[in-house]
Every structure is written in structure tokens, then in C-alpha cells.
Length: 292
Image 1 (cartoon, helix red, strand yellow):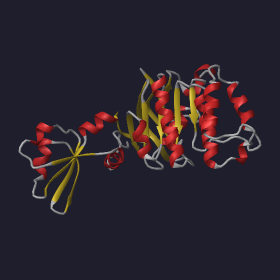
Image 2 (cartoon, helix red, strand yellow; image 1 turned 60 degrees about the vertical axis):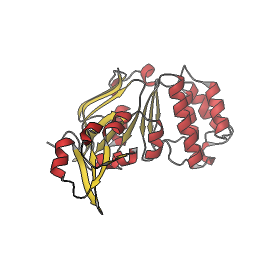
Image 3 (tube, helix red, strand yellow; image 1 turned 180 degrees about the horizontal axis):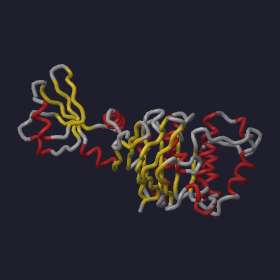
Image 4 (tube, rainbow, N blue to C red; image 1 turned 135 degrees about the vertical axis):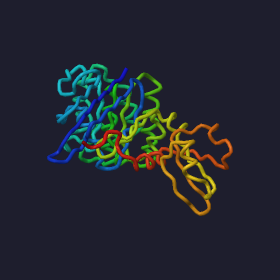
């Protein structure tokens, strides 16, 4: 079962197509990293999923419902942290907590108290007196405390230092282990994303390049380090080549369908790719749906 589904989702801003023909599936219980360069359409996609924007073409469904027609009970199942989420500067954290809790029947007071203590947040402080990192931590506290079934996080680590980012990532892992929760995470800090996600979706120019379970991607995409004399045409008969380049006396080839048996007779060293390297490889490719 998919918690999020889009089919042909498209959104224009004047003549610019920010999201184009996007087919995205987010299975229930998965943690999906939505990855792309700045301007690739990640935030626009999230705004379409939240009903903050109207698509020009295509459809989006969250819990099987059109975001533009989502009833309050369904919307309460979603915890959403926007990139620039903020509260009025005069509002004390205690007042913001009371207001937020009033909207959610499953509000977890114990989680709120624990996170306020872990993040060293004083309930009597006004929101405007907090640092950027403290504001981010407080917004995360509110969202996690509502016990959502779906978390949508757009650059959640913005303004957080390394130690607090690690705290936050550990919190996501603990949530996923505690109960079935679906998480859509958009972030440019790929080392953070790699620690928590089990699915990835690469988008470019508003279109989907690839979506796959991360472990499957790691297993099938490898970099082969071969002698420079290796014939690329012969290599392409054994593997689907994503990229090749020569470095000194070596040919470096990234393949998308690696199987050890296909190395038979080849003098090759197999190198594993981390998420950042995988992103760079697939970012050179175009979306699966080309411009009409």
C-alpha cells in the first residue's frame, strides 16, 4: 500500500515547468529521501502533496485522498515541517504547545516534555528570542509530539549543528522502530539522509530520474576500476554503462546491473558507492519522462 502516489503530476509557474509528469510512490512504513539539486522541484512537489499548490496536470493522493479535498481527520495524520516554518515571535513556547496540541487527539505530552528537555528549550521563552537552531528544534518537537502517521520534512536539519542533527536522525530512527510511520525527507545533506532512508527518489528539472530501495541500488550500481586498455564497447555488452572516464592508467566505469558472474575474465576492482556518489551519477541523467 502506498501512502503517497502521484501520476503525471505537473506544475507550472508562468512558462516554467517546476514539476513535470512526476510518478512517485511512497510505500507505507518506508523512509524515502526525495533528492535533487536546488531548483529541481522538491519543495514544489511537497507543496502539491500538502495541497498548498494546485497541479496544472496529473494527480496526487495522500492516504488515498486528493490533498485539495483532504478532510481535517486525514490532515491531522500528517506532520509537516516546511523549510521556512515559523511562529509569531511574541508567542511563548508554552502557548504554542497548547495551541498545537488542541488540534491533535493523539498528542503525546510525554514526548513533548522529553524533547523539550533534550533540546534544552524553556517553555516560558518567546519564540522570537530563540536562535535559528532552537526554532528548528522546537518545530520538530511540535510535529513529532502530534504522533503523525506520515512525516513530510523539507530540509529539517536547516540551522542545526552536527550534534543536534545527529540527535534528530536518532529520533527518526527511534520513531520508525517504535511504530509504523511513513517519512518523506527532502535534504541536501546526503550523509544525513543515508543514515535513515530505505528508499530514494532522484528528481531533476521537476521529473523523476529514478526511484528504488536504497539497498537494491547499492547492490546493483558499482564502479569498476579496469585497465585503461579495456575496450568500452566490449564492456557495454556485459553491463549497462552509466558513465565511464579515464584516470591515469585506469578506466572507471559505473554500471547499473552489476553481477559478479559478468566479471568473468575481466581484471577489475569493484568499488561500492555511497549515496552522494549515487546521486552524482544519476544526476547526470535526464528524467525518465522527456519533455514533449
